[in-house]
Image (cartoon, rainbow, N blue to C red):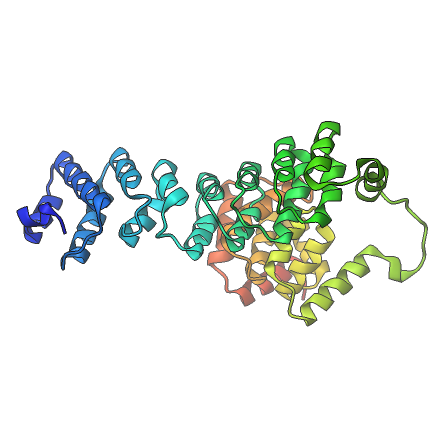
Length: 364
């Protein structure tokens, strides 16, 4: 591998790695890291040295891990096991590998997004050339700091749906509108909405960037995007908004296009009717039963419904927060309520969760 392998046998390295002196272990770890940063490990003992570094990393102080991560974050030959350990560690250790490591796959990044903290997602949002599967995972959590960082990352590839969510969220965030205006890949169909949410100065930038006619745009766009439609009295069942939503969900289900992502997107967009019907359908519980259960215990009922609908547990906190923010219910996810919500996932199969939801609603 290096001069170190000539000076020390694997047995000697292993003994040093097991030293009871933390300072000596940390010195060995950084020495191996420095050598690994120079060139790939090419000896027959590559696997053994990788394992020794992994074991040393486990016992290393955070500042030593951070130094090692900075040394090796951009190297494609850094041991994968070590990179994954750093990527899921404290933010100051994870940041360099989340931003730069070529060892991490898109699937790795999606998994970290789902299971780690806001700070980990913030680092991934700024990573060079993240793909649509990664940005789709980031948008789900509806975290303004992450979304702004992602929009500012001109190399981040975003789907039409992710761009649409960004534009909707930009109504509340000036900085996000500016970064979206600067993106040449913003779908043209979303320009009217962005224009409508913008102030006068921002609109000048939009007209310049995308070549739109502001004079003809302003009145038409504002009416179409911002103004509420006039309420019209009607007695026809076909115009009932809830019936329309129920039919849409049923149609999507028959076409095998109804998925947990629709439930998440509905809460991000504030479409509570769509949320109710989509999650009820996926959980195989009548929407009336779901509503009744939510009235009796919103956090626990939501957790049971998520389990029954096969939504991942990692998504539950952000879903809970979105619904609280919308005023759909008001309940803090802490203490006994949080513990019972966790049990709704860990203590039930999806089928059992659906049954528990019906029982909670008082259904027979």
